[in-house]
Length: 398
Picture 1: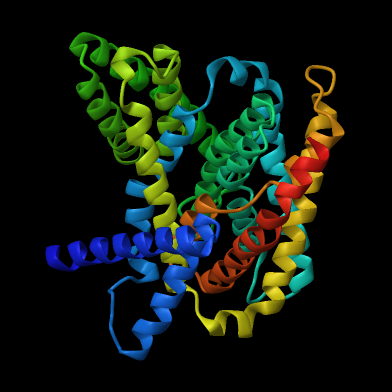
Picture 2: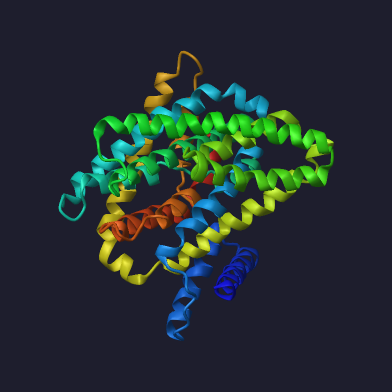
């Protein structure tokens, strides 16, 4: 078992390196290069009958307990506190009302467009909507920096994505519990969501304060880096396994509390933390795209192309509804220009978090493959169409 796990880790690590090489020499966008690396490897390994041991049913624990904590902590750590406070109202609105509006709008469009309640029931549409409500700003923020766009716009993208990822993951957990029968009465839904969501916030606040105090007591930059890295994994594990609250909310709050405590990345105690989380975030983000490339099959496009097309249209329409309705709602508090709203709609790419969630679906659900196909279709559309055209839109509307 140990040798198999080690060989899988080394194999996936090698695929990310190949993706980096494709990015460097073919000038492909990095996530697209890693996706291509995994897809080509999958085709080649099938020809030589080599089995990596990577299966849809053995990815859940790796994705949830190793990859997601790193991605959430890294995103939260790199937010700028002052700018986050300035844009907190629209960010919170988009991460709550926006996520719910996006999820239900998407679910409704997909459910009625597929029109096959027996094979694709309402709960399957809701699962798809919750997964695709999570956005990934990495490529967009890189483009924003390249054109020297305002920091406020970058923080709006990053903050909205971070908070909406956390909310979407909690919503996904709730809907998945409904789908698998873990909760089965309507009156339990709100109580379950509230306990998981707000319990994660509270535990994250306490855990983050403890971590901050521990770092200050040790007063060593290397120790700070170690403790913060361990805190991402340990806070998630304790929250999920022992306290039964949202591990994602916990990790996000721990990262924000510690980040706000150190205030500036140049703080002596935080020296090296940004660098560490930078490469960890890059590695695990690229790793997810390599895994996605491996599990994609040509049959998926042949059999599920219509479902993919429906999901792409639904994702764009739902994102439009969510952004414009939320910005209208919070206009008296904090106005967001029409140009920036348009950028938020088209720049709402689906990426690592959506891949992570769909890979964690139990294969006992009869419709898991349809959902996976639709999510992969939306992610590929995000990379090939939105990601490649967004830079021009940014230059035009910024």
